Picture 1: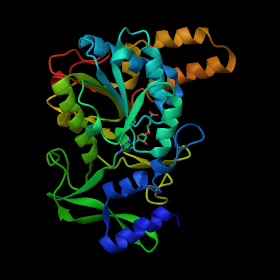
Picture 2 (picture 1 turned 120 degrees about the vertical axis):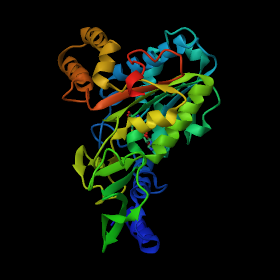
Picture 3 (picture 1 turned 60 degrees about the vertical axis):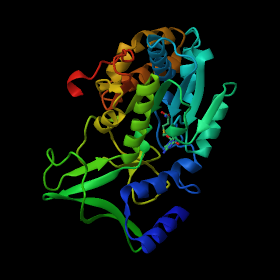
Picture 4 (picture 1 turned 90 degrees about the horizontal axis):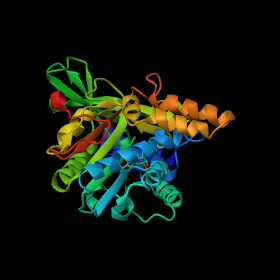
Length: 357
Ligand code: SAH
């Protein structure tokens, strides 16, 4: 048995079954044994891969979109350029390279990386060598400046709570123990997820992400008060129904309760509660990653890069373009939403929410 599983079983033995969010927090961020705390999970040798690791085009285009938004808002200087959960630092490295030609952008930016994992902070530092960067633990530690922020596959890594509808009431999912096995179960009836009584029926399962709502609230408040914009990219939808908790190990799915700390745990992101928490900042329509990247000109960029490549490199570059944009790959599952000040232009490639607001 792993040390983390023994620790979780001991906690359950003394405190009783724990909320799913507490279980996820232990698995992902336990200071000694957590999944993110102890390793670099990315890339082909790791457990999963992400858009910036697939192609440099992803970070380049998101970077140029953010820089355009900075220009549209009158080039505030200085401003805070922030990334949440920067992984290996690849997206930020591509963003910084692509925006070198934007006059004034680099002089004005104060780079801040919000990262919980010491192992990944080291990776980011080596990837961004030569760039001045400050690491912080939480969004509330970012400096009080106009905020231009990027978050790719960050919100899906935050702990969720799950509630099962039982008649007119709700029972929350808790993690308990049967001998040496960790098993999910239902707590007695109690308070349920806000605003979901109308669109659910007996037996339905609803997820909430309190940490995500809190962070979106902090970002929205900063953008509303100081200006800026946030590009949030993740898999999920406006509002979900059903169990989306998943565990990935070596690119294959596994039981979330079998080997705590050894597998990546994620859940689909509900963008509606993020948008609502971010008010009074405005939010854009939720747009698929494929459409967003096409609007930003990924095909032209892909062709320009392809001209310099041949053989295997060219084939894998074409496959990467498809992987990022095609509806059968990441193009439809992944969504993009931006937060921006009321009355300002949304970042390029995205439309004001209007009907969805
Ligand atoms: N954005 C990167 C990595 C995604 S993996 C990419 O697209 O490749 C999720 C990232 O979020 C990791 O860097 C992880 O360490 C970080 N992370 C997860 N939970 C966090 C939290 N609560 N606070 C800060 N960082 C967190």
